[in-house]
Length: 380
Image 1 (cartoon, rainbow, N blue to C red):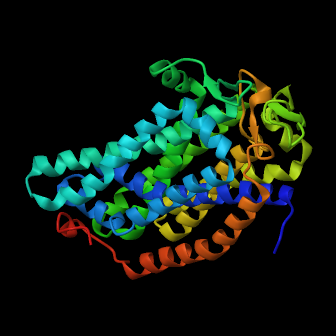
Image 2: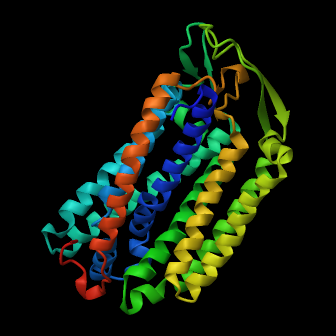
Image 3: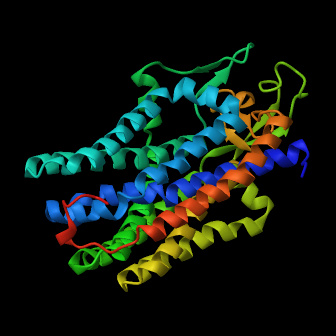
């Protein structure tokens, strides 16, 4: 099964999107449950019960994040080079936060002292909230364009250094996108808690599920209306692929309301954001009625559609530049070689089904409902 280069580049754009959606639905969900510890759990036992619903799976769920990161590096090496040049401090902040999670899972139940338990619960909450917030912030920055450019030797540069390279990323629109990320994943977390807990823990989040689903819908709508005011980018012409300056010699136009250009060109694409709104409503209704399975299905579709909404708006750009549009990275000029993409596709065809099968097996094998009485007894 041999594909031409252009087809492979599109396939890998889709595959990276699928991996990011997989991360949101798995690792994002268990981070959401961890973020809700103090909102839902009224004492250390109830928080321990909540942790028990995700502790058998959280490390396996992180495979989706690792795989997505590896796929981006292998498929779009220039994106890795350009993003690490300017987003380094943000990525380190995410990494430091994620480090707290395995420590909390491992050490929490080694002592029964209440302060010991509470401190590790706080660490787990912080280590989960920060990544899901900042991942949304990154998407918000990508939609607006990042302040980078490439010099004549295709070395990447950003405006500002140290904190001045991090703080501008926390602009109002990007923070709004971060809040969309948090609210949609917290909705998933509430539904998971309903599904996996008994007693009053699960019933306690019914109303919260509806509120979070409606909050996500409102924030998502505001973000869409706000994004309409932004300029977007249109790829006019690529430079010859054999040119050393192929990345920086292409022609890119700045287009008013450009983030909606793809939707204007193909109206059928509007089904994606419309489906997100519809499924958010259905997920909130299912949650308040206590139908967690249906709610998770609807909210999972909503999460996938929200991520796809941003991806469609940006296509074919992966990292647009707000300073020098010609330095923007697209799937056409940031990709690895034809041979690399083809070999990687074979690896995906073989190993992703194996990973997916293992994930399904693990969830099925370690499936059980927990109650407050199970809290602080260990996580497995």
